[in-house]
Length: 171
Image (cartoon, rainbow, N blue to C red; front, side, top):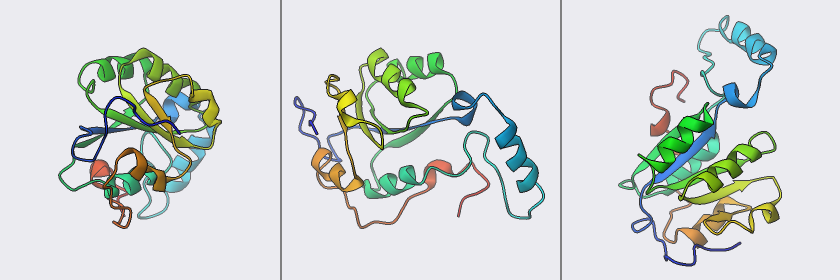
């Protein structure tokens, strides 16, 4: 794991955090699976299928909860890469971007890193070594390592779901 060499970070000095989640619309061209679940969910009282993912990305709520309450945080659900790059180079240019890397989104994550100037904190189950050549990126293998990148996080705090307030399926 490489740290951001140039700037020692704490939750207070890190700046705003942007969680990115890739939409099913971008990742999956075959809609049959999602259409099936939509038909099932619509028949069960209390169930709701969000537009962009099957369930709330729990990793975002967990890490958001670790941040100080006053920390600025935002969520970007990506369903169009060109728009996402424009947003990262514009409105979100000063944000640290956090993403969960999976086989399904790995090429998109790498594209974001190379097309923007943001610092990235990654986690997931893909090959960490594939990101060693990217100087604005750190790849963690577990959430506890976040304290090495952002010292002072409280890993005992509960998940925080405010980024998902607009969804009907908040616990």
